[in-house]
Length: 334
Ligand SMILES: *[C@@H]1O[C@H](CO)[C@@H](O)[C@H](O)[C@H]1NC(C)=O
Ligand SMILES: *[C@@H]1O[C@H](CO)[C@@H](O)[C@H](O)[C@H]1NC(C)=O
Ligand SMILES: *[C@@H]1O[C@H](CO)[C@@H](O)[C@H](O)[C@H]1NC(C)=O
Ligand SMILES: *[C@@H]1O[C@H](CO)[C@@H](O)[C@H](O)[C@H]1NC(C)=O
Image 1: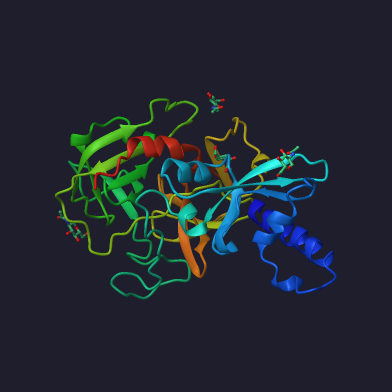
Image 2 (image 1 turned 90 degrees about the vertical axis):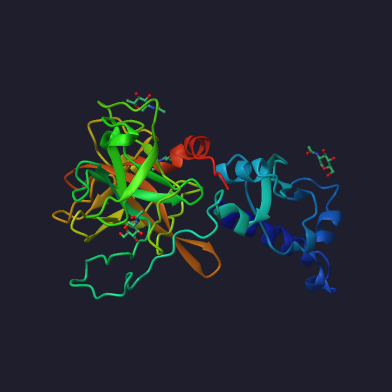
């Protein structure tokens, strides 16, 4: 949204500048000359470093997770200021979109296999195929590797990290647990269990945990990571959750205050709406929303970890709120 606004402003100001030019070769003017010619008038204008060639950079508010990540990763960031009519400047950071959407070591994430692995046929319109979302995992007790205690989401390759709810794993130590990429085969060892320090059993706030898998086990060849969000989900996005019997649950992320709920919803939790009588998502499974990451590539981003429902309202841990916590706990080893 903000990005669109910036583009609109760029375009509008550029057109204003061009039209004061008596049309003379104005369409050949580059953004670069525009910056120069505007150095003395600050209102309704743009200031800052010249964007090389004008090409592949897009602008985002600097005080945003993905912008901060750019600086942390020492990527090239150009700063510009937009001045409104009152000459009040707003700072924007410009960098390649390609850089902004991919989190550390998430080079290739969120690609679905619409026909399953191995290829198979849906037995109903709402059924999900094995391997279709190749980051779906399950958490087991080692004493029973056939029946999972909850679901999980594979999201980081180098440290082999799985996201799940704290409630699912809080009573265990890593030696008790195993993970599988199939619901009936928990054959992978867990080398570390990290439960959020401020997980609150009563309120369910900070209900998030990470499992790191042993590096010596072989994962299925089709295993793939989901993308983590770099910004919160947009209101009115439609997303899917998945039930324990592998059916789609269609959900919509509403304005959060529309989720009437006796408990206080703050930014640690997010809610979605599902149709009355629809399937219930599986405990600790992901809320998956499609997002255009780079031009022509739609990727699946996981925005929530399913906790519980109250009629049509489903409550999830709001993953966007834990970006820093996740980065601090998952150190890519490669
Ligand atoms: C107006 O622009 C000039 C040149 O870009 C800059 O030096 C000056 O600080 C700006 N004034 C304000 C109020 O931002
Ligand atoms: C675990 O099982 C999967 C199939 O679900 C298989 O691809 C993988 O190689 C197995 N890994 C180990 C360590 O047994
Ligand atoms: C969210 O709400 C819970 C319960 O009302 C509270 O304990 C917690 O501190 C709040 N978290 C934040 C980040 O405000
Ligand atoms: C989730 O967390 C982010 C980051 O703290 C926050 O901006 C957002 O409002 C929260 N809620 C939703 C529904 O995205």
